[in-house]
Length: 176
Length: 176
Image (spheres, chains in turn brown, cyan):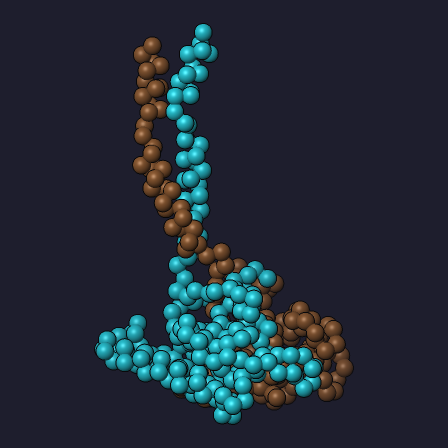
C-alpha cells in the first residue's frame, strides 16, 4: 500500500505552469524561425567608386578573367586567351554551353570551367583574384553560379576542404 | 481486482506527459532554427534569390533589394523598374527607365545611397571612429535571380559612385 501511494504522489507533479510557458514559447519561436539560411558572396568594384586596398603581390598580375556571354565562358589571362580545348586558337568561347544559345543557367558548363581553372591554379598557385566580365543580357543567377564555380572546387579536396581556386572576385563592367 | 483499482487512477487526470515530451522536442527544434541573421528577406514571386554554395555569413550593412519590379533601399522603395524587349533575344526583361538614369547612374538610387553614406560616416565620427562603426562602404545586394546583368551593373555602378565599393551579394545557402 505504501508503495502505491508513492507512485500517485509522483504523478501529481503540477505540469500546468510549464505547459503554459512552453505553449507561449512555441508561437513566439515559430515566428522567428528562418527556414532558409542566407549567405553572402563578397566582391569589390574594379577601379571605380571608393578606393579599395591594392593587392600586395608585387609580381606581374595574372589578370585572370572569365567572360560570360550567351555562347559560354571565355577564359583569358594577361597575355592570351585560353583557346578552346583541342581546336586551336579559333574564335569562340573557351567553354561553350552544353546547349546552343545557353537558354538555361544549367546549360553553362561549370565542370569544364572548373577543370580549366584548376589547371590555371596549378600553374599560378598564389593567384587568388579573378575578374568576371558578364554580358548585359546574362542572368544574375548565371553570375552567381559562375562565382561559385570560380571560388572553390568541392570535388578536389585539400586538407579536407574544397580546394580554393580564386576566392576574390571582381566584377567588371562587361560587354554590351 | 488489480485491474479495477488501476483504471480509476489512470482516468483521474488527463495524462500530459506525452504532450510534454512532444512540446519539449518542438521547443528544442525551434530554438535550434531560431533566426539570428542580421538581414531579413521577404520572399515573393518577383524576388527570388539565387542559390549558392557560399558559406560566408551575412553582416549588417545598407541593404539594397532589386526585384523584377522595383529597387528598395533599407525597406523604402526608391524606384520602379520597367520592362523592355531585349533586342537580340526578343524576351521581355526588367530595365531601369531611361529617364531615371544618366549614363549608367541611377539618379534616385544615387541620392538615397549618398544619404546613407553620409549617415554612416556621421555615425562613425560620433563614435570616435571605433572599428565596429567605421564606414567601409559595405552594401548588401539582394537581386532577383532572373534579372539581366545590365540592371545589376547599373545598381553596382551607382553604389560605387556613392562610395559603396564592397558588395555582398545575398544568396540562399544551398548544397548544390
